Length: 214
Image (cartoon, rainbow, N blue to C red; front, top):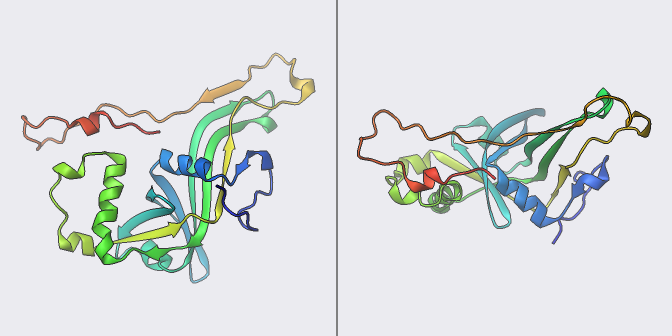
């Protein structure tokens, strides 16, 4: 399945790196919880980094109900970008230096998740990152849920862009005595650090020890 190609989602350059394939887009969205939401206030552009999660054909993000980003995005056109740096590409010339990356840009109208569905969506967010976590937490209070707004976006307009592989140098530069290659970049998680007020007999749960980024 592919997303429909539109004027604002089509790639202007490096078309070979672009993709409208839903599986490719979903894999990138699911590989990191971080995104940036772009929106307008009084005709001026703003960009806010936040966490996102995907459920089927929808992408969700949340924030304080008093958040300017949340209030201005509700019912409005937004642009969402997810970007993962995979490596620095070192060429034989400064011009051909590049980066290996995976990215998705989505467009659409943000909708507000109904109050009665917010708790389930927030649980899905936490469980998507740390399966089993919600089962050991105290339940969210009604006030906490009320103070949180969740926005969603149907994944129907957008595209992915991916670069992989070595540098692409000019043919006449290939014999130059200059090192070229890729410096891989990856997310690394260190050992969990227990907060000082946790009782000594409370062990780090397995879902924390097993956690890893894609």
